[in-house]
Length: 257
Image 1 (cartoon, rainbow, N blue to C red):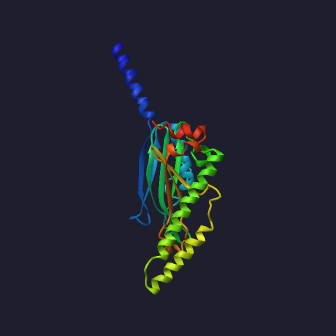
Image 2 (cartoon, rainbow, N blue to C red):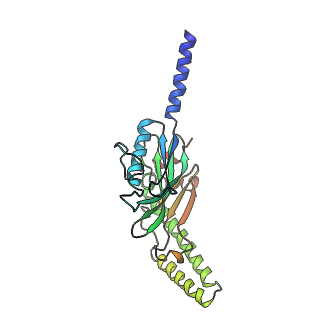
Image 3 (cartoon, rainbow, N blue to C red):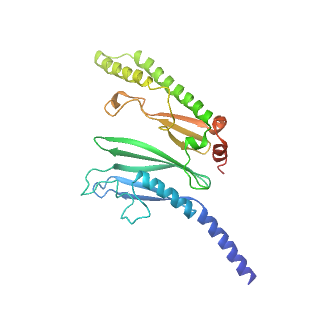
C-alpha cells in the first residue's frame, strides 16, 4: 500500500512539473482564399494562467482577436475571405528566440497590406514568472537608455557614412551613376534623422546570452529599391550592457536557467 502511495506521489510530482513546463504548440492553417499562403501562431503552453495571459496579449495585438471569444480560426480577422478580399496580413510565420522557464521571446514575420503591401517583423518578450511583457523601458535605467541611444545612433551613422563612401567610389556607367546619386541622397537625408530620440521604435529580441535590437530602414516603400542597407541590426552580449540594466533587467536577463 505504501509503495502505491509513493508511486502516486511521484507520478503527481512529474505531472505537475510537466504542466508548468513551458512549450509551444504550433497552429498552422492555409488561407481560405489563397490556399498556398500559410499562417502560423505559437500557442504557449505550461502554467495555464501565465500562458493564457501571454497568448491573449499577442493574439489581440497581432491578430485582432480575443481568445476568450468564440472563433472558427485564430487567423479569421487577418486573412482574406470571399467577403473580405483584402487581407490584413498576407501570411504569418514566426521564430522562437528564447523559451526557458524564465523568458519567452518570439519574432513574427509577415506582410501588411493597405494602399500597398509591406513586409515587417515584430518581436515580443515576456517574463514567464508573471506573464508581463519585457520592454527596453522595463529593463534599462534612465542613464542606460541614454547611453544605448548614443551607441545605436553612432553604429547606424557609421554604417551609413561608410556605405556612402563606398557608393561615391563605385565605378559605374552614366545611367547607373544617376541611380547611385539617388541612393547617396537618400542616405545623406537619413543621417538627418540621427541621433535617435527614443527607443520606442526599436525592435527588441532576447537570446540566451544576448539581445538584438533592430531599427527600420532609411527608405519608404517607393524608395526601397535604392536602399541596399535595409534594416539595421545590433547585437549586444548581455555582459556588455549590464551597466545599463536596472535591478529588474539584470535579474531577468542574467537568470535564464
